[in-house]
Length: 636
Image (cartoon, one colour):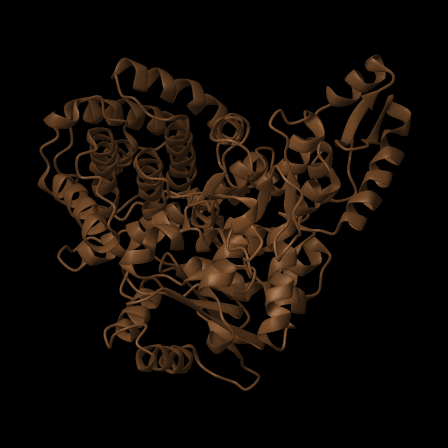
């Protein structure tokens, strides 16, 4: 089947093996639910003659219903037919990058515009992102009048850029024409898949599936570049193990046959580095003696203990996991080999506190070493730290429901009710047990609700009547109060307030904003004079943009005297690195309240998942902000 656009193809693939609701499909495709319904109608029209339809099952989502198995099987067995003309801006950017990296001659936008049926102005607009992408690898495009544009840079950078792009495309769509027809020599990837695996098996080298796929892509790129007369310059690898050297030698022989040209010694040496950088270590952690590896592991764990009050120094499993990962990581950073991390944005959102801890520790360690550890590498470390935190600490702080028990019968009845509550709802905290006579004069109730065995008047909190042997209805009514999420509303009430809320309509820079907010917090005694420089330093390391226009600036470490969140809404936006922030939460977290404050991050992640930024930035005061925030949190 030939789909009119890529989104229909993606939607068809998503619904092949699982049932998905409209909201999830809209989130994955970054479109509205209305667009999803329109696309489903279009898909059903295409499938009308192939014995299948997508139907909406109430409460579950869209699912594939096959009416004629034979006709549908004939459809899915057909080879895919991909359009070789890029239709969207991201596709054109990818095609342009590949053309520049693989073309031996200058390129003219006029020629490409004619080939892809777009205007020259459209391609000129896409070139800004192309230049930015290539600039990450120190590659530059030079323009000569009447000749066109030509790419210049080192051969290692050319190969790294092309390999990383193809790797990203492979994760998104393994049948992308850039992978199958444009960038690589025909038949080479398939041949390498078998030969490389056999080679690593013979040499007893363990690689993850991703690591082996990446080396396979690099080798396919190398074959094309070598065959077209672009060898590597001089290069020497140090401290490489014998099994890695042997594997690199065998692979170099294979690449020489595929390229049809002799390989230089530098090619084999560079292969050694690629293999060593992705090798899974078989040795015991105690046998790893590289000073940099051990030093970095100990430094990270000590830094987290000192600055964040989480002591994981005695966690042998975490120490071993970090040590094994960092040994190969050091090889990568030493030779500036970049491994893409497709989960980086998810890691930031799901492990925000662990991410900040790890980033602060690695950045601090970076002051004493020549190595520059990329954000992708930090993301891999965060996974180990996050798992370690979950293993030892209840980092997902929860505020348990607190109940007042009013009981006018004997002590045995009280104990029976308590036992029943503990068995049915162990999360309930019965903070007080009082008699009816003690309850009547109370002006207010501090607890979240009241459980009573007697008839009483409601004060300011809900009441649940409970007999000594409660009925199912009574337990169900109690459950409606117990199972309410109180953690995030409690965080909202405790750490957010009107005096630390600001709407900015005039233009302001990031530095001016930090200075203004930190000065107020310092005057109020929430932070010291070292807080502002630390916030600026943290922002300089990596942008604190969480996503969707929401930013979370904060200090390196827990430096506040008292925890508070300063909320800033900027309807017109504030320049935040390469992005624009509209909702800013400046976090000042103290060591004394760090366990509770960890749940603050869950509020921000909820805002992100609910795409609440647009509604939040339209608020004009703290009351309306709180209303939108509570509404958003209650839905999730």
